[in-house]
Length: 141
Length: 253
Image 1 (cartoon, rainbow over the protein chains, first blue to last red):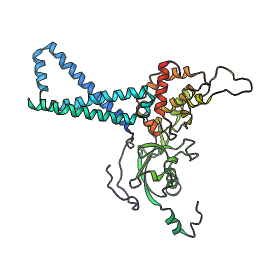
Image 2 (cartoon, each protein chain N blue to C red):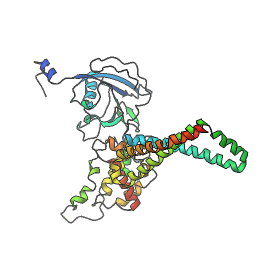
Image 3 (cartoon, chains in turn orange, cyan):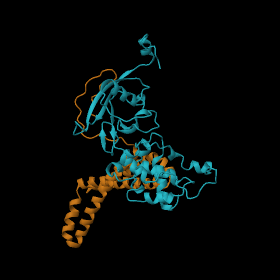
Image 4 (cartoon, rainbow over the protein chains, first blue to last red):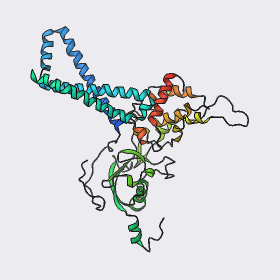
């Protein structure tokens, strides 16, 4: 990380005072990081849905206000945000299927690592299909 | 063991090269420190040495106040689980040659249990969960007089994996759920419940399944596989936990 690449093989140098208040970050494997990503994407999707329900409910209150809000979404920045949103949903969906398999099928429990890379591969394929098409729409209007 | 070092130091030098390894150990003295602090030690090591040997060298030659647990030093007693380079390992089973010695080696206490001193944590919450799952054989019938309880090879194989547990707490303290929720039974307790739930001689499986079918029981497991990775005995911990989950769903082992 921040260590300068010193040859500690022979030189017993005195490194600068390290101030790391907590412990080191636990170095988990694919399983732990897929869980972390699953949590982050899950929370992000939750907040999207919250906002989405609120702005859709606005049409009942005032159709003009609804149009203003939806109009605000038709910007390139929101278009990029939609890429992130779809990326999060696609990962969460595929990884959710992986978790179900891991829970119910002992073969999958043994091969969760392989399944994680399959999830990543499927995610890349899906995003390669979605992103160019979507960005053409966003930037051609 | 070479005893001829006094006569021919060079000969042994060329035979087994040694090198200086930097250890950065997270120290905590409850009498002096408000917060844990990192301390560096340079130790002369052989590739065949283990992290435990380095800790011994530090304690015996550099700083006698370094505190850690170890008993058998051969991976059986389960006393010296610690976080080595960010992963839970037994110090006595981690060889120097398997670590990247071009960088310092970080050693700290296992996470999620109360830190007592340096590398020693309070294991009581861990053992309390272990006791709660009733980790002992409970049979409702008496064996034939003068005979042992019969079990065939297949029935013994069913729970063989989980008999290997040495209660070192490496799995439980590698679990992200356990770090944030100390009430969770933890992988080790579930592994030891699994060992008796799937034992054909035991009759109290339902009791243990009821204990683990709890908000803080097996359903807390999020299959991060940190426990399976940390287990020094190679137990497939996550697999054992999901077998217990399925036994609860089926209502029988």
